[in-house]
Length: 618
Image (tube, rainbow, N blue to C red; front, side, top):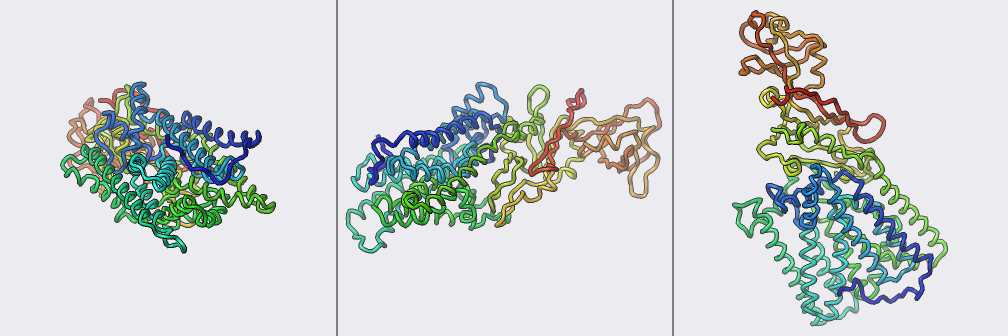
Protein backbone atom coordinates (compact mmCIF):
# COMPACT_ATOMS: atom_id res chain seq x y z
CA UNK A 1 0.00 0.00 0.00
CA UNK A 2 1.35 3.42 -0.96
CA UNK A 3 2.39 5.59 1.96
CA UNK A 4 2.14 9.33 1.50
CA UNK A 5 5.54 10.04 2.99
CA UNK A 6 8.85 8.72 4.19
CA UNK A 7 10.08 8.78 7.74
CA UNK A 8 10.42 12.25 9.19
CA UNK A 9 13.42 13.60 11.00
CA UNK A 10 11.14 15.15 13.58
CA UNK A 11 8.72 12.93 15.43
CA UNK A 12 5.61 14.02 17.24
CA UNK A 13 5.51 13.04 20.91
CA UNK A 14 4.03 9.72 21.87
CA UNK A 15 1.07 11.61 23.21
CA UNK A 16 0.42 14.83 21.34
CA UNK A 17 -1.89 16.04 24.05
CA UNK A 18 -5.63 16.34 24.06
CA UNK A 19 -5.75 20.07 23.15
CA UNK A 20 -3.61 19.54 20.07
CA UNK A 21 -5.66 16.50 19.04
CA UNK A 22 -8.90 18.45 19.40
CA UNK A 23 -7.43 21.31 17.38
CA UNK A 24 -6.35 18.88 14.65
CA UNK A 25 -9.81 17.31 14.55
CA UNK A 26 -11.41 20.74 14.22
CA UNK A 27 -8.89 21.82 11.59
CA UNK A 28 -9.80 18.85 9.41
CA UNK A 29 -13.40 18.15 10.46
CA UNK A 30 -14.94 21.61 10.12
CA UNK A 31 -13.88 22.11 6.47
CA UNK A 32 -15.10 18.61 5.62
CA UNK A 33 -18.48 19.34 7.24
CA UNK A 34 -18.64 22.61 5.30
CA UNK A 35 -17.89 20.78 2.04
CA UNK A 36 -20.82 18.40 2.44
CA UNK A 37 -23.23 21.13 3.54
CA UNK A 38 -22.26 23.31 0.59
CA UNK A 39 -22.74 20.33 -1.76
CA UNK A 40 -26.36 20.13 -0.68
CA UNK A 41 -27.24 23.83 -0.55
CA UNK A 42 -25.23 25.43 -3.39
CA UNK A 43 -27.34 25.53 -6.55
CA UNK A 44 -25.06 27.44 -8.93
CA UNK A 45 -22.07 26.30 -10.98
CA UNK A 46 -19.20 27.85 -12.90
CA UNK A 47 -18.72 27.74 -16.69
CA UNK A 48 -16.01 25.05 -16.41
CA UNK A 49 -18.22 23.00 -14.13
CA UNK A 50 -21.11 23.03 -16.59
CA UNK A 51 -18.66 21.87 -19.27
CA UNK A 52 -17.77 18.89 -17.07
CA UNK A 53 -21.47 18.11 -16.50
CA UNK A 54 -22.15 18.29 -20.24
CA UNK A 55 -19.30 15.87 -20.97
CA UNK A 56 -20.54 13.53 -18.23
CA UNK A 57 -23.94 13.53 -19.95
CA UNK A 58 -22.18 12.72 -23.21
CA UNK A 59 -20.55 9.68 -21.62
CA UNK A 60 -23.95 8.32 -20.50
CA UNK A 61 -25.47 8.91 -23.95
CA UNK A 62 -27.36 12.16 -23.24
CA UNK A 63 -25.13 14.54 -25.16
CA UNK A 64 -24.55 15.06 -28.88
CA UNK A 65 -20.76 15.42 -28.69
CA UNK A 66 -17.78 15.77 -26.35
CA UNK A 67 -16.81 19.39 -25.62
CA UNK A 68 -13.31 19.36 -27.10
CA UNK A 69 -11.75 22.13 -25.01
CA UNK A 70 -11.83 19.95 -21.87
CA UNK A 71 -9.96 16.91 -20.63
CA UNK A 72 -12.24 13.93 -19.87
CA UNK A 73 -11.29 12.59 -16.43
CA UNK A 74 -13.50 14.80 -14.27
CA UNK A 75 -16.44 14.12 -16.57
CA UNK A 76 -15.85 10.38 -16.25
CA UNK A 77 -15.79 10.68 -12.46
CA UNK A 78 -19.11 12.55 -12.64
CA UNK A 79 -20.90 9.91 -14.73
CA UNK A 80 -22.54 8.23 -11.66
CA UNK A 81 -23.91 11.63 -10.68
CA UNK A 82 -25.20 12.11 -14.24
CA UNK A 83 -26.91 8.72 -14.09
CA UNK A 84 -28.50 9.65 -10.74
CA UNK A 85 -29.62 12.99 -12.17
CA UNK A 86 -31.31 11.19 -15.07
CA UNK A 87 -32.87 8.49 -12.91
CA UNK A 88 -34.45 11.01 -10.53
CA UNK A 89 -35.65 13.25 -13.35
CA UNK A 90 -34.09 16.31 -11.76
CA UNK A 91 -34.40 19.79 -13.32
CA UNK A 92 -31.87 20.66 -16.02
CA UNK A 93 -29.74 22.92 -13.80
CA UNK A 94 -29.91 20.82 -10.61
CA UNK A 95 -26.28 20.30 -9.57
CA UNK A 96 -26.37 18.66 -6.13
CA UNK A 97 -25.49 15.10 -7.37
CA UNK A 98 -22.36 16.49 -9.00
CA UNK A 99 -21.51 18.61 -5.97
CA UNK A 100 -21.76 15.57 -3.69
CA UNK A 101 -19.23 13.80 -5.91
CA UNK A 102 -16.93 16.80 -5.70
CA UNK A 103 -17.35 16.98 -1.93
CA UNK A 104 -16.09 13.40 -1.70
CA UNK A 105 -13.06 14.23 -3.87
CA UNK A 106 -12.20 17.34 -1.88
CA UNK A 107 -12.62 15.42 1.39
CA UNK A 108 -10.13 12.83 0.11
CA UNK A 109 -7.82 15.69 -0.85
CA UNK A 110 -7.90 17.25 2.64
CA UNK A 111 -7.43 13.91 4.39
CA UNK A 112 -4.59 12.90 2.07
CA UNK A 113 -2.70 16.17 2.41
CA UNK A 114 -3.17 16.17 6.18
CA UNK A 115 -1.85 12.59 6.37
CA UNK A 116 1.18 13.51 4.27
CA UNK A 117 2.05 16.52 6.42
CA UNK A 118 1.55 14.59 9.65
CA UNK A 119 3.73 11.73 8.40
CA UNK A 120 6.52 14.05 7.35
CA UNK A 121 6.32 16.70 10.06
CA UNK A 122 4.47 15.15 12.95
CA UNK A 123 1.36 16.54 14.61
CA UNK A 124 2.71 19.89 15.80
CA UNK A 125 1.31 23.41 16.14
CA UNK A 126 3.53 24.49 13.22
CA UNK A 127 2.12 21.78 10.97
CA UNK A 128 -1.47 22.70 11.85
CA UNK A 129 -0.74 26.38 11.27
CA UNK A 130 0.80 25.64 7.87
CA UNK A 131 -2.14 23.40 6.92
CA UNK A 132 -4.71 26.01 7.99
CA UNK A 133 -2.96 28.88 6.22
CA UNK A 134 -1.93 27.20 2.95
CA UNK A 135 -4.40 24.38 2.31
CA UNK A 136 -7.48 25.95 3.93
CA UNK A 137 -6.92 29.29 2.26
CA UNK A 138 -9.30 31.84 0.78
CA UNK A 139 -8.78 30.25 -2.65
CA UNK A 140 -9.80 26.81 -1.37
CA UNK A 141 -13.11 28.06 0.05
CA UNK A 142 -13.71 30.13 -3.07
CA UNK A 143 -13.60 27.15 -5.46
CA UNK A 144 -14.16 23.98 -3.40
CA UNK A 145 -18.01 24.22 -3.48
CA UNK A 146 -17.94 23.90 -7.26
CA UNK A 147 -16.69 21.41 -9.86
CA UNK A 148 -13.08 22.57 -9.66
CA UNK A 149 -10.18 20.95 -11.51
CA UNK A 150 -7.61 23.00 -9.64
CA UNK A 151 -7.53 21.67 -6.06
CA UNK A 152 -7.46 17.86 -6.04
CA UNK A 153 -4.45 17.62 -8.43
CA UNK A 154 -2.29 18.96 -5.59
CA UNK A 155 -2.65 15.56 -3.90
CA UNK A 156 -1.64 13.80 -7.13
CA UNK A 157 1.51 15.92 -7.27
CA UNK A 158 2.35 14.96 -3.67
CA UNK A 159 1.85 11.29 -4.53
CA UNK A 160 4.11 11.61 -7.59
CA UNK A 161 6.83 13.22 -5.48
CA UNK A 162 6.65 10.43 -2.90
CA UNK A 163 6.72 7.73 -5.59
CA UNK A 164 9.66 9.46 -7.26
CA UNK A 165 11.56 9.39 -3.99
CA UNK A 166 10.82 5.68 -3.58
CA UNK A 167 11.91 5.04 -7.16
CA UNK A 168 15.18 6.93 -6.68
CA UNK A 169 15.96 4.91 -3.54
CA UNK A 170 14.97 1.58 -5.07
CA UNK A 171 13.94 1.48 -8.75
CA UNK A 172 11.05 -0.95 -9.26
CA UNK A 173 8.72 -1.45 -12.21
CA UNK A 174 5.61 -1.22 -10.01
CA UNK A 175 6.60 2.22 -8.71
CA UNK A 176 7.47 3.34 -12.25
CA UNK A 177 4.07 2.24 -13.54
CA UNK A 178 2.42 4.09 -10.67
CA UNK A 179 4.23 7.26 -11.72
CA UNK A 180 3.15 6.76 -15.33
CA UNK A 181 -0.48 6.32 -14.25
CA UNK A 182 -0.47 9.37 -11.98
CA UNK A 183 1.20 11.50 -14.65
CA UNK A 184 -1.41 10.49 -17.24
CA UNK A 185 -4.30 11.00 -14.83
CA UNK A 186 -3.06 14.49 -13.99
CA UNK A 187 -3.05 15.61 -17.62
CA UNK A 188 -6.42 13.95 -18.21
CA UNK A 189 -7.81 16.25 -15.53
CA UNK A 190 -6.35 19.35 -17.17
CA UNK A 191 -3.63 19.75 -19.76
CA UNK A 192 -1.90 22.33 -17.54
CA UNK A 193 -0.76 19.53 -15.23
CA UNK A 194 1.79 18.39 -17.75
CA UNK A 195 3.84 20.70 -15.56
CA UNK A 196 4.01 17.90 -12.93
CA UNK A 197 6.38 15.72 -14.91
CA UNK A 198 8.35 18.74 -16.14
CA UNK A 199 8.86 19.97 -12.58
CA UNK A 200 9.85 16.53 -11.29
CA UNK A 201 12.39 15.99 -14.06
CA UNK A 202 13.73 19.48 -13.51
CA UNK A 203 14.07 18.86 -9.78
CA UNK A 204 16.26 15.81 -10.50
CA UNK A 205 18.61 17.90 -12.70
CA UNK A 206 18.88 21.19 -10.86
CA UNK A 207 20.62 19.84 -7.72
CA UNK A 208 23.75 19.22 -9.79
CA UNK A 209 24.11 22.98 -10.10
CA UNK A 210 24.73 23.11 -6.37
CA UNK A 211 28.31 22.97 -5.05
CA UNK A 212 29.62 19.67 -3.71
CA UNK A 213 26.87 17.65 -5.42
CA UNK A 214 28.53 14.56 -6.91
CA UNK A 215 27.19 13.23 -10.22
CA UNK A 216 26.76 9.45 -10.35
CA UNK A 217 26.00 7.22 -13.31
CA UNK A 218 23.10 5.65 -11.41
CA UNK A 219 21.54 9.12 -11.07
CA UNK A 220 21.63 9.52 -14.84
CA UNK A 221 19.99 6.10 -15.34
CA UNK A 222 17.29 7.03 -12.83
CA UNK A 223 16.66 10.30 -14.65
CA UNK A 224 16.37 8.47 -17.97
CA UNK A 225 13.87 6.06 -16.43
CA UNK A 226 11.82 8.97 -15.11
CA UNK A 227 11.97 10.65 -18.50
CA UNK A 228 10.69 7.43 -20.03
CA UNK A 229 7.83 7.52 -17.52
CA UNK A 230 6.96 11.05 -18.61
CA UNK A 231 6.93 9.95 -22.27
CA UNK A 232 4.75 6.93 -21.40
CA UNK A 233 2.29 9.22 -19.57
CA UNK A 234 2.15 11.53 -22.58
CA UNK A 235 1.48 8.61 -24.94
CA UNK A 236 -1.28 7.27 -22.70
CA UNK A 237 -2.87 10.71 -22.57
CA UNK A 238 -2.60 11.08 -26.35
CA UNK A 239 -4.32 7.77 -27.11
CA UNK A 240 -7.11 8.29 -24.57
CA UNK A 241 -7.82 11.80 -25.87
CA UNK A 242 -7.89 10.51 -29.45
CA UNK A 243 -10.53 7.94 -28.50
CA UNK A 244 -12.62 10.55 -26.66
CA UNK A 245 -12.40 13.19 -29.41
CA UNK A 246 -13.28 10.81 -32.24
CA UNK A 247 -17.00 11.52 -31.77
CA UNK A 248 -16.42 15.27 -31.90
CA UNK A 249 -14.29 15.35 -35.05
CA UNK A 250 -15.07 12.05 -36.82
CA UNK A 251 -13.40 13.10 -40.10
CA UNK A 252 -10.06 14.07 -38.58
CA UNK A 253 -7.08 11.65 -38.57
CA UNK A 254 -7.26 9.64 -35.35
CA UNK A 255 -3.76 10.36 -34.02
CA UNK A 256 -3.98 14.07 -34.85
CA UNK A 257 -7.11 14.67 -32.78
CA UNK A 258 -5.25 15.63 -29.55
CA UNK A 259 -3.07 18.00 -31.56
CA UNK A 260 -6.15 19.71 -32.98
CA UNK A 261 -7.58 20.01 -29.47
CA UNK A 262 -4.41 21.61 -28.09
CA UNK A 263 -4.28 23.98 -31.05
CA UNK A 264 -7.92 24.93 -30.53
CA UNK A 265 -7.34 25.63 -26.84
CA UNK A 266 -4.22 27.71 -27.46
CA UNK A 267 -5.89 29.82 -30.17
CA UNK A 268 -9.29 30.39 -28.59
CA UNK A 269 -8.40 33.91 -27.43
CA UNK A 270 -6.25 34.90 -30.39
CA UNK A 271 -7.42 38.15 -31.96
CA UNK A 272 -9.93 38.84 -29.16
CA UNK A 273 -7.80 41.28 -27.18
CA UNK A 274 -8.36 39.21 -24.01
CA UNK A 275 -5.33 39.32 -21.72
CA UNK A 276 -4.24 37.27 -18.71
CA UNK A 277 -1.64 39.45 -16.92
CA UNK A 278 1.67 37.88 -16.00
CA UNK A 279 1.62 39.56 -12.59
CA UNK A 280 -1.64 37.90 -11.50
CA UNK A 281 -0.05 35.21 -9.28
CA UNK A 282 2.31 37.52 -7.39
CA UNK A 283 -0.36 40.20 -7.01
CA UNK A 284 -2.86 37.76 -5.46
CA UNK A 285 -0.46 35.61 -3.40
CA UNK A 286 -2.00 36.76 -0.05
CA UNK A 287 -5.19 34.88 -0.94
CA UNK A 288 -3.17 31.68 -0.53
CA UNK A 289 -2.53 32.64 3.09
CA UNK A 290 -0.64 35.52 4.71
CA UNK A 291 1.21 33.20 7.08
CA UNK A 292 2.03 30.87 4.20
CA UNK A 293 3.34 33.79 2.16
CA UNK A 294 5.51 35.05 5.02
CA UNK A 295 6.95 31.58 5.65
CA UNK A 296 7.44 30.60 2.01
CA UNK A 297 10.80 32.28 1.41
CA UNK A 298 12.49 31.01 4.58
CA UNK A 299 10.89 27.60 4.02
CA UNK A 300 12.31 27.35 0.51
CA UNK A 301 15.77 28.33 1.77
CA UNK A 302 15.63 25.79 4.59
CA UNK A 303 14.46 22.94 2.33
CA UNK A 304 16.99 23.71 -0.40
CA UNK A 305 19.69 23.17 2.22
CA UNK A 306 18.03 20.03 3.61
CA UNK A 307 17.92 16.39 2.59
CA UNK A 308 17.20 15.15 -0.92
CA UNK A 309 13.44 14.91 -0.50
CA UNK A 310 13.09 18.42 0.92
CA UNK A 311 15.36 19.77 -1.76
CA UNK A 312 13.40 18.06 -4.53
CA UNK A 313 10.12 19.33 -3.16
CA UNK A 314 11.40 22.91 -3.01
CA UNK A 315 12.72 22.67 -6.56
CA UNK A 316 9.42 21.26 -7.81
CA UNK A 317 7.60 24.23 -6.25
CA UNK A 318 9.97 26.73 -7.86
CA UNK A 319 9.90 25.00 -11.26
CA UNK A 320 6.11 24.65 -11.35
CA UNK A 321 5.61 28.24 -10.18
CA UNK A 322 7.91 29.50 -12.92
CA UNK A 323 6.27 27.41 -15.62
CA UNK A 324 2.81 28.72 -14.71
CA UNK A 325 4.02 32.15 -15.79
CA UNK A 326 5.02 30.81 -19.21
CA UNK A 327 1.46 29.74 -20.02
CA UNK A 328 -0.73 32.17 -21.93
CA UNK A 329 -3.69 31.46 -19.61
CA UNK A 330 -3.45 32.72 -16.04
CA UNK A 331 -6.07 32.76 -13.30
CA UNK A 332 -5.54 32.76 -9.56
CA UNK A 333 -7.05 29.29 -9.18
CA UNK A 334 -4.47 27.74 -11.53
CA UNK A 335 -1.90 27.84 -8.70
CA UNK A 336 -4.12 25.97 -6.22
CA UNK A 337 -2.28 22.66 -6.77
CA UNK A 338 0.83 24.14 -5.10
CA UNK A 339 -0.96 24.66 -1.75
CA UNK A 340 0.14 21.30 -0.20
CA UNK A 341 3.76 21.97 -1.16
CA UNK A 342 3.51 25.50 0.24
CA UNK A 343 2.26 24.03 3.52
CA UNK A 344 5.20 21.62 3.70
CA UNK A 345 7.73 24.35 2.89
CA UNK A 346 6.22 26.88 5.25
CA UNK A 347 5.93 24.49 8.18
CA UNK A 348 9.72 24.37 8.55
CA UNK A 349 9.97 28.15 8.82
CA UNK A 350 6.93 28.34 11.13
CA UNK A 351 8.45 25.69 13.41
CA UNK A 352 11.54 27.84 13.91
CA UNK A 353 9.57 31.10 14.19
CA UNK A 354 7.31 29.73 16.93
CA UNK A 355 10.38 29.34 19.16
CA UNK A 356 10.70 33.13 19.41
CA UNK A 357 8.10 35.10 21.33
CA UNK A 358 7.93 38.07 18.95
CA UNK A 359 7.72 35.91 15.83
CA UNK A 360 5.16 33.68 17.54
CA UNK A 361 2.86 36.66 18.15
CA UNK A 362 3.33 37.88 14.58
CA UNK A 363 2.67 34.40 13.21
CA UNK A 364 -0.50 33.99 15.25
CA UNK A 365 -1.69 37.40 14.06
CA UNK A 366 -1.17 36.38 10.41
CA UNK A 367 -2.86 33.03 11.04
CA UNK A 368 -5.84 34.80 12.61
CA UNK A 369 -6.07 37.00 9.52
CA UNK A 370 -6.04 33.91 7.30
CA UNK A 371 -8.72 32.14 9.33
CA UNK A 372 -10.92 35.24 9.34
CA UNK A 373 -10.51 35.76 5.56
CA UNK A 374 -11.13 32.09 4.69
CA UNK A 375 -14.04 31.85 7.12
CA UNK A 376 -15.67 34.92 5.65
CA UNK A 377 -15.34 33.42 2.17
CA UNK A 378 -16.82 30.12 3.39
CA UNK A 379 -19.82 31.88 4.95
CA UNK A 380 -20.62 33.82 1.78
CA UNK A 381 -22.62 30.79 0.68
CA UNK A 382 -25.40 32.00 2.97
CA UNK A 383 -26.33 34.54 0.28
CA UNK A 384 -29.54 33.75 -1.56
CA UNK A 385 -27.69 33.79 -4.88
CA UNK A 386 -25.99 30.48 -4.03
CA UNK A 387 -29.06 28.79 -2.51
CA UNK A 388 -31.60 29.84 -5.18
CA UNK A 389 -30.04 29.64 -8.59
CA UNK A 390 -30.75 32.78 -10.65
CA UNK A 391 -29.68 30.87 -13.75
CA UNK A 392 -32.50 28.39 -13.21
CA UNK A 393 -35.06 31.17 -12.80
CA UNK A 394 -33.81 32.78 -16.00
CA UNK A 395 -33.53 29.63 -18.11
CA UNK A 396 -36.90 28.21 -17.06
CA UNK A 397 -38.21 30.49 -19.82
CA UNK A 398 -36.88 27.86 -22.22
CA UNK A 399 -39.60 25.42 -21.11
CA UNK A 400 -43.29 25.56 -21.99
CA UNK A 401 -46.14 24.83 -19.60
CA UNK A 402 -45.64 21.08 -20.16
CA UNK A 403 -41.94 21.22 -19.29
CA UNK A 404 -40.77 20.68 -22.87
CA UNK A 405 -38.15 22.93 -24.49
CA UNK A 406 -39.51 25.67 -26.71
CA UNK A 407 -38.09 26.03 -30.19
CA UNK A 408 -36.39 27.65 -31.82
CA UNK A 409 -34.18 29.51 -29.34
CA UNK A 410 -32.45 32.70 -30.45
CA UNK A 411 -29.47 33.64 -28.30
CA UNK A 412 -27.18 36.63 -28.23
CA UNK A 413 -23.90 35.65 -26.55
CA UNK A 414 -23.27 33.93 -23.18
CA UNK A 415 -25.45 34.51 -20.14
CA UNK A 416 -23.85 36.08 -17.05
CA UNK A 417 -24.82 35.87 -13.38
CA UNK A 418 -23.10 37.51 -10.44
CA UNK A 419 -23.48 37.24 -6.64
CA UNK A 420 -23.79 40.39 -4.49
CA UNK A 421 -20.00 40.49 -4.02
CA UNK A 422 -17.29 41.90 -6.24
CA UNK A 423 -14.22 39.75 -6.75
CA UNK A 424 -11.25 40.69 -4.52
CA UNK A 425 -8.83 39.14 -7.05
CA UNK A 426 -7.01 41.71 -9.16
CA UNK A 427 -6.76 40.89 -12.87
CA UNK A 428 -8.72 37.62 -12.63
CA UNK A 429 -11.27 37.76 -15.45
CA UNK A 430 -13.80 35.21 -14.23
CA UNK A 431 -13.68 34.96 -10.42
CA UNK A 432 -17.18 35.14 -8.85
CA UNK A 433 -18.79 35.27 -12.27
CA UNK A 434 -21.07 32.48 -13.47
CA UNK A 435 -21.68 32.00 -17.19
CA UNK A 436 -23.85 29.78 -19.37
CA UNK A 437 -23.21 29.42 -23.09
CA UNK A 438 -25.15 27.99 -26.03
CA UNK A 439 -23.71 24.50 -25.82
CA UNK A 440 -24.74 24.25 -22.15
CA UNK A 441 -28.37 24.80 -23.14
CA UNK A 442 -28.07 22.16 -25.86
CA UNK A 443 -26.82 19.54 -23.39
CA UNK A 444 -28.79 20.43 -20.26
CA UNK A 445 -32.16 21.29 -21.76
CA UNK A 446 -32.09 18.83 -24.64
CA UNK A 447 -32.41 21.54 -27.30
CA UNK A 448 -31.48 20.37 -30.79
CA UNK A 449 -28.41 22.16 -32.15
CA UNK A 450 -30.43 23.19 -35.22
CA UNK A 451 -33.03 24.83 -32.95
CA UNK A 452 -30.52 27.07 -31.15
CA UNK A 453 -29.59 30.00 -33.34
CA UNK A 454 -27.01 32.69 -32.65
CA UNK A 455 -27.88 36.32 -33.34
CA UNK A 456 -25.56 39.31 -33.23
CA UNK A 457 -28.12 42.11 -33.25
CA UNK A 458 -31.51 40.70 -32.25
CA UNK A 459 -33.37 44.00 -32.55
CA UNK A 460 -32.32 44.14 -36.20
CA UNK A 461 -32.39 40.48 -37.19
CA UNK A 462 -35.56 39.34 -35.40
CA UNK A 463 -38.05 42.01 -36.36
CA UNK A 464 -40.33 39.41 -37.92
CA UNK A 465 -39.30 36.19 -36.22
CA UNK A 466 -41.83 36.45 -33.39
CA UNK A 467 -44.77 36.07 -35.77
CA UNK A 468 -43.05 33.39 -37.81
CA UNK A 469 -42.19 31.24 -34.77
CA UNK A 470 -44.90 31.60 -32.09
CA UNK A 471 -43.66 30.42 -28.69
CA UNK A 472 -40.00 30.76 -29.62
CA UNK A 473 -37.47 32.15 -27.14
CA UNK A 474 -35.06 35.06 -27.42
CA UNK A 475 -32.24 35.39 -24.85
CA UNK A 476 -30.36 38.67 -25.03
CA UNK A 477 -27.41 40.13 -23.12
CA UNK A 478 -25.47 43.32 -23.66
CA UNK A 479 -22.08 41.57 -23.25
CA UNK A 480 -20.62 38.82 -21.04
CA UNK A 481 -19.53 40.14 -17.65
CA UNK A 482 -15.78 39.92 -17.00
CA UNK A 483 -13.60 41.41 -14.28
CA UNK A 484 -11.27 44.22 -15.35
CA UNK A 485 -7.65 43.37 -16.11
CA UNK A 486 -6.03 45.89 -13.82
CA UNK A 487 -3.78 45.83 -10.77
CA UNK A 488 -6.59 46.91 -8.47
CA UNK A 489 -9.67 44.75 -7.96
CA UNK A 490 -13.05 46.21 -8.84
CA UNK A 491 -16.53 45.48 -10.20
CA UNK A 492 -16.95 43.75 -13.57
CA UNK A 493 -16.47 45.94 -16.61
CA UNK A 494 -19.73 47.34 -17.96
CA UNK A 495 -21.92 46.08 -15.12
CA UNK A 496 -23.60 49.49 -14.75
CA UNK A 497 -25.02 49.12 -18.27
CA UNK A 498 -25.59 45.37 -18.20
CA UNK A 499 -29.04 44.14 -19.25
CA UNK A 500 -30.08 40.54 -19.90
CA UNK A 501 -33.56 39.40 -20.87
CA UNK A 502 -35.38 36.12 -21.41
CA UNK A 503 -38.34 36.58 -23.73
CA UNK A 504 -41.02 34.45 -25.41
CA UNK A 505 -42.75 35.34 -28.69
CA UNK A 506 -46.50 35.88 -28.42
CA UNK A 507 -49.37 37.85 -29.90
CA UNK A 508 -49.38 41.13 -28.01
CA UNK A 509 -52.46 42.83 -29.42
CA UNK A 510 -55.12 42.74 -32.15
CA UNK A 511 -56.92 45.72 -33.63
CA UNK A 512 -59.34 46.80 -36.35
CA UNK A 513 -57.23 48.39 -39.08
CA UNK A 514 -60.07 50.69 -40.16
CA UNK A 515 -60.33 52.29 -36.74
CA UNK A 516 -56.69 52.20 -35.76
CA UNK A 517 -54.59 52.87 -38.86
CA UNK A 518 -54.49 56.51 -39.82
CA UNK A 519 -54.85 57.32 -43.48
CA UNK A 520 -51.90 58.31 -45.56
CA UNK A 521 -48.19 57.85 -45.24
CA UNK A 522 -46.02 60.54 -43.70
CA UNK A 523 -42.99 62.13 -45.28
CA UNK A 524 -40.75 59.75 -43.33
CA UNK A 525 -42.48 56.76 -44.93
CA UNK A 526 -44.29 55.62 -41.76
CA UNK A 527 -47.97 55.12 -41.06
CA UNK A 528 -49.35 55.68 -37.54
CA UNK A 529 -51.45 53.13 -35.62
CA UNK A 530 -53.35 54.52 -32.65
CA UNK A 531 -54.72 52.08 -30.06
CA UNK A 532 -55.32 53.02 -26.43
CA UNK A 533 -52.40 51.93 -24.24
CA UNK A 534 -50.62 50.16 -27.10
CA UNK A 535 -47.33 52.03 -26.71
CA UNK A 536 -47.17 51.24 -22.99
CA UNK A 537 -48.05 47.61 -23.66
CA UNK A 538 -45.10 47.30 -26.02
CA UNK A 539 -42.70 48.68 -23.42
CA UNK A 540 -41.81 45.14 -22.28
CA UNK A 541 -41.77 43.66 -25.80
CA UNK A 542 -38.70 43.19 -27.98
CA UNK A 543 -38.81 43.18 -31.79
CA UNK A 544 -42.54 44.01 -32.21
CA UNK A 545 -43.98 43.55 -35.69
CA UNK A 546 -47.31 43.91 -37.49
CA UNK A 547 -48.86 40.85 -39.11
CA UNK A 548 -51.54 41.26 -41.79
CA UNK A 549 -54.50 38.87 -41.98
CA UNK A 550 -53.01 37.04 -44.97
CA UNK A 551 -49.84 36.34 -42.95
CA UNK A 552 -47.57 36.97 -45.90
CA UNK A 553 -46.68 40.54 -44.91
CA UNK A 554 -44.79 41.42 -41.73
CA UNK A 555 -43.78 44.96 -40.81
CA UNK A 556 -41.48 46.12 -37.96
CA UNK A 557 -43.03 48.55 -35.47
CA UNK A 558 -41.67 51.44 -33.50
CA UNK A 559 -43.26 53.00 -30.42
CA UNK A 560 -44.17 56.64 -31.10
CA UNK A 561 -46.11 57.40 -27.91
CA UNK A 562 -48.15 55.90 -25.06
CA UNK A 563 -51.02 55.09 -27.44
CA UNK A 564 -49.28 55.15 -30.80
CA UNK A 565 -46.88 53.05 -32.84
CA UNK A 566 -45.63 53.63 -36.34
CA UNK A 567 -44.98 51.16 -39.12
CA UNK A 568 -43.35 51.53 -42.52
CA UNK A 569 -46.00 50.34 -45.01
CA UNK A 570 -45.96 50.81 -48.75
CA UNK A 571 -49.07 50.64 -50.88
CA UNK A 572 -52.68 51.80 -50.50
CA UNK A 573 -54.53 52.41 -47.27
CA UNK A 574 -56.16 49.41 -45.54
CA UNK A 575 -59.59 48.56 -46.98
CA UNK A 576 -62.47 50.22 -45.11
CA UNK A 577 -64.57 47.05 -45.00
CA UNK A 578 -65.95 46.64 -41.45
CA UNK A 579 -66.00 43.25 -39.85
CA UNK A 580 -62.85 42.04 -41.59
CA UNK A 581 -60.13 39.99 -39.90
CA UNK A 582 -58.20 41.97 -37.30
CA UNK A 583 -54.55 42.77 -37.69
CA UNK A 584 -52.11 41.39 -35.11
CA UNK A 585 -49.06 42.71 -33.33
CA UNK A 586 -46.47 40.11 -32.33
CA UNK A 587 -43.28 40.43 -30.31
CA UNK A 588 -40.95 38.83 -27.79
CA UNK A 589 -42.54 39.39 -24.37
CA UNK A 590 -39.98 39.87 -21.57
CA UNK A 591 -40.40 37.18 -18.91
CA UNK A 592 -37.20 37.67 -16.89
CA UNK A 593 -35.04 40.78 -16.81
CA UNK A 594 -31.58 40.97 -15.21
CA UNK A 595 -30.30 44.46 -14.42
CA UNK A 596 -27.67 45.97 -12.09
CA UNK A 597 -28.62 46.09 -8.44
CA UNK A 598 -29.18 49.64 -7.23
CA UNK A 599 -27.99 49.40 -3.62
CA UNK A 600 -25.19 46.80 -3.68
CA UNK A 601 -22.78 45.02 -6.05
CA UNK A 602 -24.26 42.35 -8.25
CA UNK A 603 -27.38 41.93 -10.34
CA UNK A 604 -31.11 42.08 -9.69
CA UNK A 605 -33.63 39.75 -11.31
CA UNK A 606 -37.06 41.06 -12.27
CA UNK A 607 -39.63 38.39 -13.16
CA UNK A 608 -42.81 39.33 -14.98
CA UNK A 609 -46.07 37.42 -14.86
CA UNK A 610 -46.12 34.85 -17.67
CA UNK A 611 -49.10 35.47 -19.95
CA UNK A 612 -51.53 32.65 -20.48
CA UNK A 613 -53.67 31.67 -23.43
CA UNK A 614 -53.39 29.97 -26.75
CA UNK A 615 -51.79 32.84 -28.61
CA UNK A 616 -48.18 31.90 -27.88
CA UNK A 617 -48.60 28.24 -28.78
CA UNK A 618 -50.43 28.63 -32.04
